[in-house]
Image 1 (cartoon, one colour):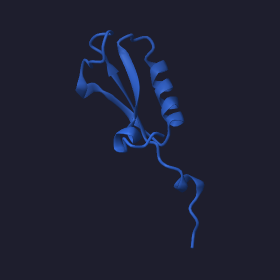
Image 2: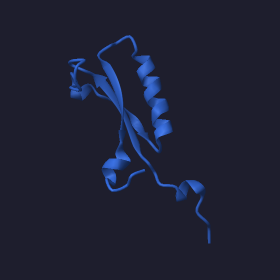
Image 3: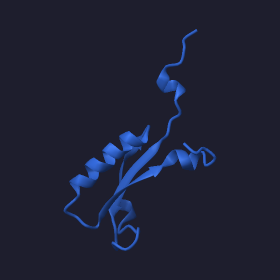
Length: 82
């Protein structure tokens, strides 16, 4: 019988990275929902943070552009405190 690897044993803590242009800097309301940049889904916060940082740095000249990390694992299993 094949034993599970360390990656298979650890829980997936999925994170979504996305961004878009805000209509107002005082809130989180996107100018164009169809134009949202869905960067991707990542297996852990560290990988999501790297993707977020890269995208945020690429758009630093646009003050209206914002990128976010969503903790999908918390939405999928709200009882999990990971």
